[in-house]
Image 1 (cartoon, rainbow, N blue to C red):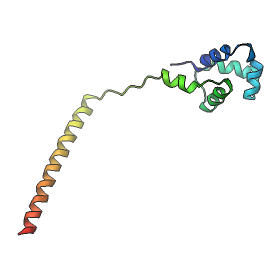
Image 2: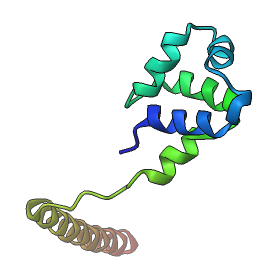
Image 3: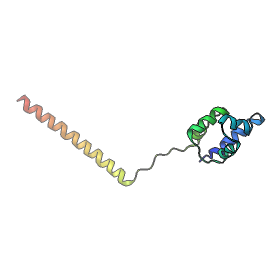
Image 4: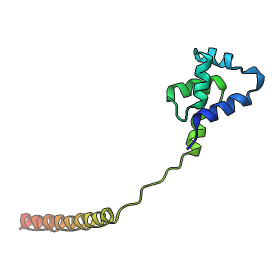
Amino acid sequence: MVHIGQLIKSVFDSKGKSCTIEWFASQLNCKRANIYNIFNRPTIDSQLLEQISIILGHDFFKDLSNNMRVTRPEKSPASTEHDAKRELYDNMMSGISRSVYREIRRLSLT
């Protein structure tokens, strides 16, 4: 998992001397201490992250999504068995429905 505060600090540091803590704090309308607090946060509010992304000109959301591992949970044997039974039931009901429909048509034609 990405430590977002460290990532923000890394991008901030890469901006060079043109970006100071004081400047960054003024852009976020907060105090210097809050900037150091942000650098130490493992997580962050999405609205604040959006503001920081705009200020620093960096898409942190893209960084987070690129680093995210999306896996599908494996189905349990019980779930797989349930799915197989459900498919068998659906096939049986479909066959019965066709048979009933044909019988109704046969009776209505005579």
